[in-house]
Length: 295
Image (cartoon, rainbow, N blue to C red; front, side):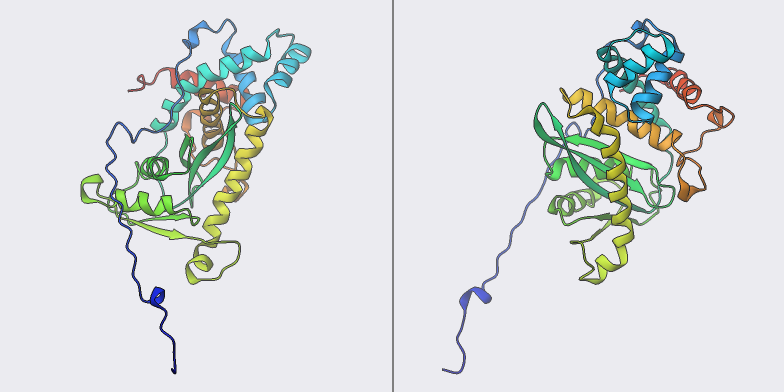
């Protein structure tokens, strides 16, 4: 016998999955309105200081309360710091969506884990490749197809329908399923091209070509981790969504980037002539309060 036949080498397996997500399932995570922001018993300037220390400078809630007490003689508990942030995040989420603006035709995305009530959860982040704005930030309890679909759907929401969109991710199969679902004619005019960068070495042409985009989202993940690490996990999902929302507000509208010549990803005219970070936070919040309520 010159050769042996191995049946498993000639046996074909097909796995077919079809997803039927409804509109009410494809909802981007958003902070709840725990209480009206008008219930804050301190001034807008005090709130802006809290956001500057706790969000922009990534200082824990306890240390933020300590700084306010010892430096500014403002007596606030760390729980008040957390409550104020959750109240503000409800309006900042609306602000993020309203001022997101157009996105580039290449987006990079990934998920990173966080802790909520001692259990692992995931934050899906997508970033625009040229202007470096965060285009989606969705929090879910798994890395499955549904949260991946929600994140990609939000990331391309403001894209030009005429553009050919390229999505760069890692090898998570959930992104393949999400792109397959979103490419159905009934789900929109965009046709998405998925490029998956596998592993840490360039072992294929796709990984070699799109590795810089994967590195871009990895740097964003590290920045996000730096800002949420002082929380040492979250007691509730609303707290996780609130801090993530405020981080996106800081990252897109207030944080200068060296690669953008120290400009912010989304420059806003009404913030240009304000020279201090707390004052920019105050102006941003007052603008967010004037926007229509979330649907």
